[in-house]
Length: 297
Image (cartoon, rainbow, N blue to C red; front, side, top):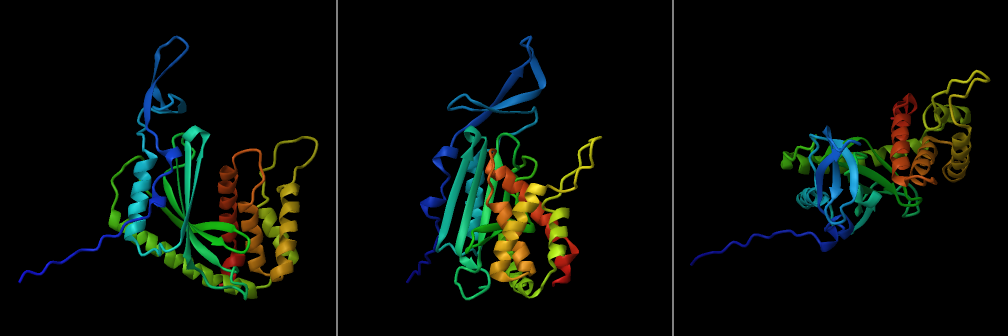
């Protein structure tokens, strides 16, 4: 009697499909100077469905469709050990399609519970970002998202380039492993936050830390006065947030961390929120390299 072996195939829910707003074709075309002569080293990326130009790029630029990248990301997720029981997906399509961001929140992958409130913990999040206007490279970034205040912070040392320098060649097995390693790093970093609660820090030390990192600004030449090396406005904002978190957690490194991630996540700006968030998140990374954090471990 013949025995038949049936292989079980996993499949992602339809919510993992690319957003319809990001599902369009992009090509390149020549651009011309005022004399209608082709500019040899440049071309324009444009949408074929609307004919709208997205960016001027180099002649070597290779278009990388969002859909192809998302399918690749979905394949990595499907073949990793990520828990997919409860995943929230949020898409951001901006600048007429020139920028695309996708956030995956894995609600079942949780860090250590910090306090009695069940929301006082982080969940694991991935963000994919790409663009046709050179704003973002194609990256997949690991985040910790604190549930109580919705503060987010990307991993200081984890970023997966989906394709490097417009090259689609990729060692897929290595990518699967990288995602699982990102989850392991997330769990470990959440354990470290428990130590931050126990590490007190002087008020003046916090102010100096913010001045040298989050609120730092390069002085501008001015013959009338010496400009401060930090933004007074940002310092006022940060110290107001610090008061909010010290009232809840005490004067410790965890309150400092929550202040920084609140400042980088909840942005009020007339420009593009994701641009400011990305820039401020880089400042948080800079702050986390200070010796204060190394001494706490």
